[in-house]
Length: 188
Image (cartoon, rainbow, N blue to C red; front, side):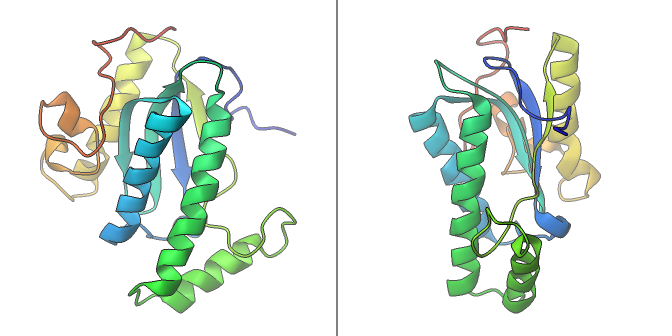
């Protein structure tokens, strides 16, 4: 039975959470975080992804997004997860990672009994996906994701966290360009 928390509707903005299997802290290495950043940029430039807000934590990614044109958000997210999974696993294998054997074993066993997984499974199935249905809900979720690094005691202020759109909303230099909600109305 399909989950109610999946991307179903086309041309609707969604609040998404993508989580690493076993909540493994993969995104503690800059090289792994930058794979996510570059992949999000690629999806913006080549796949019609529109990002309103995002925050990358040590083991999950929050994003508020939609797509332009005839592209379905679920297809972009599927491709994003597939690409980043392969790229990050390759980086773990070839790079300097003290937890290499442990991480690869976990990713291997997470996908071992799934026919669609060839070697390793980095991301949990599905996405915690909620349609943004009104402005208040948008701002609630945006504040939630921007305050994640503060609650985790990584930074004192949301805009100090480099891997978040809180920087965009504070008018600071940011890693990823986002559409500020005030720049373009979200269709609710």
